[in-house]
Length: 197
Image 1 (tube, helix red, strand yellow):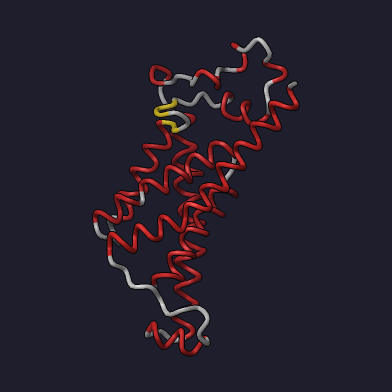
Image 2 (cartoon, rainbow, N blue to C red):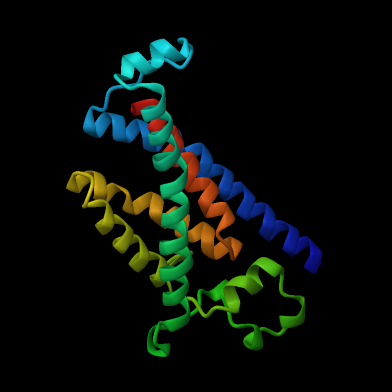
């Protein structure tokens, strides 16, 4: 029974993760609709036509692709999800810590030795669940993440960054690592960059 529950928990996580990947085009479409960002030249054109349509030469395009699509998302995930969210998860005062009913501490569960691995990763960290699976640490990290984007983006755009940030934070907490949120963030940035730059 425990193996079935562990498999089901992992399958639910993977389904939700795939859903987040599939949602990326909806995010890109919303950004296009809200900000009237023009679509880039079609990728079916030759590279020279593509670059000239953008008004960029190859090196500027590749440098921008490297930074906006790869380096920035990795750095942002390390700083925000790795350092800040990790710090908040460990440091929230005990007076604001709580548990969602299905994520009780291991020592309060009758079957704590049989707790599936994914549930253990949540239970070990004493998360304060604000709304369903969204922790207070995730919300605070996402506020900081969106605020940082005010430096380089219009206010509404920076505000909208808050929502994908919640998805990145949830993925970080559910997977207990940074690899999956980094992949998700890179995918969101690369798609947006290739479509709208």
